[in-house]
Every structure is written in structure tokens, then in C-alpha cells.
Image 1 (cartoon, helix red, strand yellow):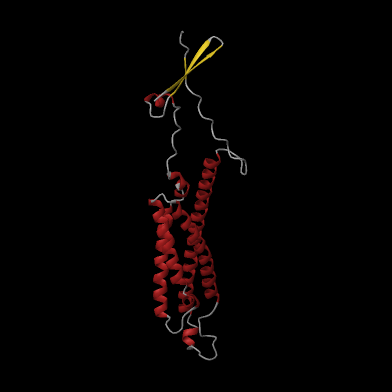
Image 2: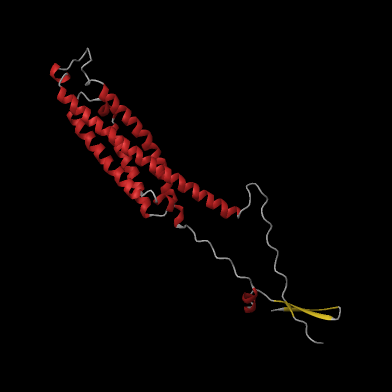
Length: 237
């Protein structure tokens, strides 16, 4: 129920009426509320999608499958006397890491989830380090002789050690692996660059929304004062 107060001041009578919130007239007098900010907008990962994560993920998945296939074939063919890349297991753990990275990149194209972007950044850091190690291992295998040719306890047959065709084939496979490692490195760097840019953009947007333009460390803004009571025009006595 509305409360009315009558005040006489200087020959003027002021009638003040306090309208409760349940009164229909309160909705007409209340100021228009500001539009709410939609939750979870797609711009959080929009910058990351400029890198075409689906294409990058497809490249990682394809090269990961190639690595695993090479690892299986070389492990079977070099059983008992594996070369340096086969003995290190670089084909398998790098291939599995590429499959994981590619799956995350493809999934980030379908879903607006900032956690997927963070996961892609973390996994691609591991891909960058792994590809550098893989390139070093394959380069070392190219510059060295076949395993067992310099071992005094177990000497391979001369035709195995000095067969130029086998060495050329081994060097060719290692060279292809080095090129694939460089391709994977470029893809991982591109995904990491766009992912970090998207994360920085999201952090900046959240800071602006929270502070509303206030400088870091500044005192919080004072809450708005309540609206004054509604005054009706004076009535004739």
C-alpha cells in the first residue's frame, strides 16, 4: 500500500507518495536496466579459429599415423639390431602425441570451449619439444654408420655394414622423418601462437568487464545512491 506524506513549505504544499515495488506504477518509474552480457560468447575462441585448427589438426593426425606406421615397419625389419630412431621409440611416442594434439585441434573447431584452447597450447608445447628431439635423433642417425658395424663384440657381416643401397634407404627414411618433424613444428608453433593470443584477449576482456575501466589496484566504485522518492505536483488547498 502506498504511503502519502503532506508537507507545507513556504506557502507550497508538497505531497510525497512512496510506491511499493509490487505496485504496477513502480515498473513505469524504474529506470531501464542495462542489457545483460551474454554468457560464454564465441569471441573467446574466435581469434584461435583464425588459425584453422581443423586443418592443423588434420595435418597432425596424418603425420602421427605416418610416424606410427614407420615405427611398426622399422621395428619389425630391424628386430635384434635396431637403429637409433627405432631404439629411442621416437616414432611411437611422437605419433601418439601428434594424434592427441590433432584430436584437440579438430574438437576446438566444433566447440566454443576455452579449456580446449588451453589444452591445445599445452599439448603443442610438448609437440614442439618432441619434434626438435626427433629431428636431432634422425640427423644423428644420418651422420652415423649402421648399428653394430663399429662394435668389437658383435660384428655384422661386411655386406651389411658397407651396403650402400641400405644406407641410402635408411638415410632417405630419416630425411623424410626430419621433413615431417619440421612440418609438425610449424603447425605446433602456429597453433600455440594463435592460442596464446586468444587467451590473452579473453583475460583482457574479463579484466575490462570486472574493472569497468578502473585502474588495477584502485578503490572500488561507490554503489549508486537510491532513487529519491517520487513527488507529485502540489495540489490546490
